[in-house]
Image (cartoon, rainbow, N blue to C red):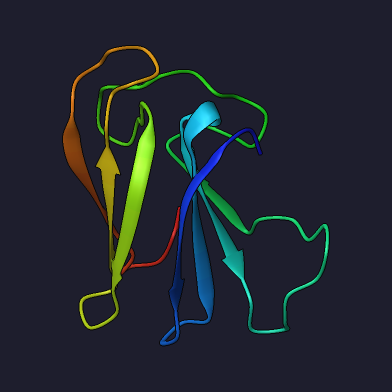
Length: 102
């Protein structure tokens, strides 16, 4: 992780969402088995994998995520993408988990 900008915990799913500003991504940690020091993220949003950090302005790409909010009823994550790392522009991204995470 480069620069954690915000965290949001979903009690409904026991998931912690962490905006990693410096790596242009949001990490999701599955806390159903508890929280451990050094634990790995379950999924990464905004990047093709855990080792990339390119800016993205297309669908699913992220450029400077600042805030996250999880809507448990609809199983959706909102990400405020400030566009501050590469200047891609400000927007709000929606990740729909109702059919799972890919």
